[in-house]
Image (cartoon, rainbow, N blue to C red; front, side, top):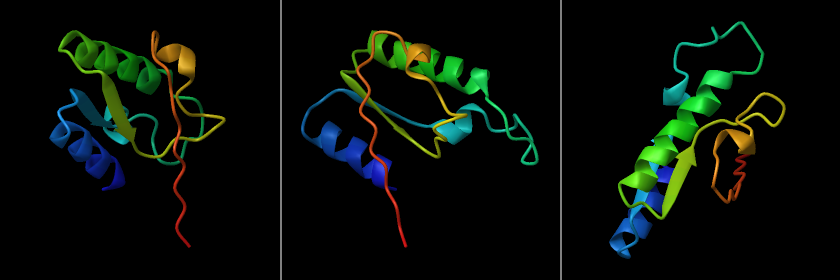
Length: 90
C-alpha cells in the first residue's frame, strides 16, 4: 500500500511513473521452502524498468520484500539510480 501511495502521488503531481510489486515478478520461483538468490526476479525487474522507461516513465516505484543477501542487485537494473526505503512495523 505504501508503494502504491507513492506512485499515486507522483502521477497526481504530473510525474510519469511506473509501479511494480517485486513479488509478482518471481511469483512461483523459488518455492517457499527454498532460500537462494533468484536471478530471474532481478532480470525481470530490469526488463520491466526498461519498458517503463521506453514508455516515458521518469521513475519506477518497486514494492515488496527484498532480502539484502538474496534480493535484486543494482546491476540487474541498468541505467537506474536506486533509492531504497526500508519500512518496519512493530
